[in-house]
Image 1 (cartoon, rainbow, N blue to C red):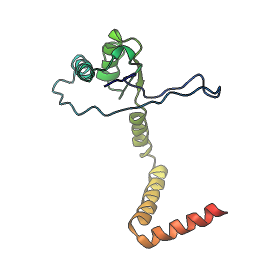
Image 2: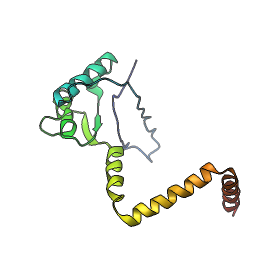
Image 3: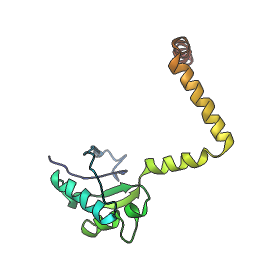
Image 4: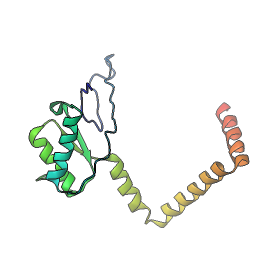
Length: 147
C-alpha cells in the first residue's frame, strides 16, 4: 500500500485560485481493534502498531483527530502528545464530528430548540413513511425549482 499522508482531518491549499491543482485527500477505515487498556501509552502504541502493520510512513503524518478525552487529547501525556514526540508534524485537532455531537447534545436542553427539532423530525418522517406525501413533496419541489 502506497500512502502519502496518514491522516488529515481538514486542510487548505495555499495555491487555490492561482490555477494550481489542489491535492486530493482520502480517509480510509483501517479496522476495529479490541482494547483492554485505555491508557494513553497503550492507545498510542496500538495506533502506531496498526500504522506499522499497514506500512504507513508516519514521518508523513500531518494530523491526528480524537475526541477531547484527557487520555486522547491531553497536552502532557495524551495519545496526541505521545505520537507527536516521535512525529512532530502530526498536529492534533479536536474531532469536528465529536465537537458537533457535544454541541447538539447541549442545545437539546433548550426547550425551543428541542421542540423545533422534534417538529422537523416529524415532518421528515411524514415524507419518508407515506408515499403520497413523498410524491406530493417531490412534485412541489420540482414546481418550486422551475420558478
